[in-house]
Image (cartoon, rainbow, N blue to C red; front, side, top):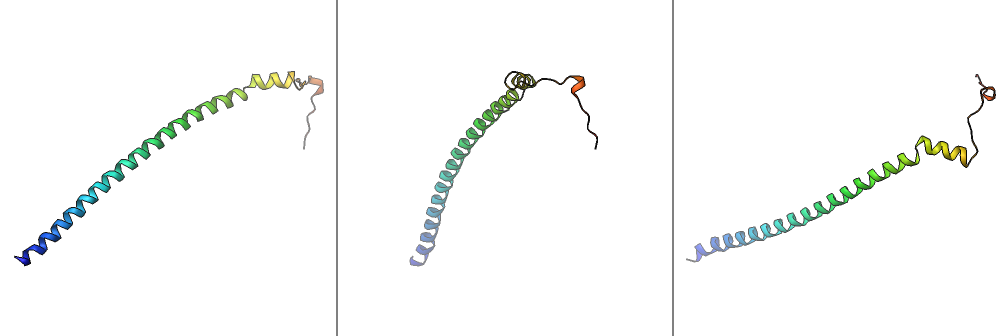
Length: 89
């Protein structure tokens, strides 16, 4: 009977180790899934901010706005035809 006990003990230890590996694997899987969801939320927030920044850039760079600032604040104007000088190399 003693010779048969050793394989049973080895198998029981292998089953216990396998069960612990399954528990650890499940825990790690859940942890990584939670991290993935957090990263996806961060990505979504960054995409919203990127869209807002693109709209803001388009607003600041609008031709009408630049022309208004150039003429109002800086006193710039289009040159008259006789003020235009063409420089050739």
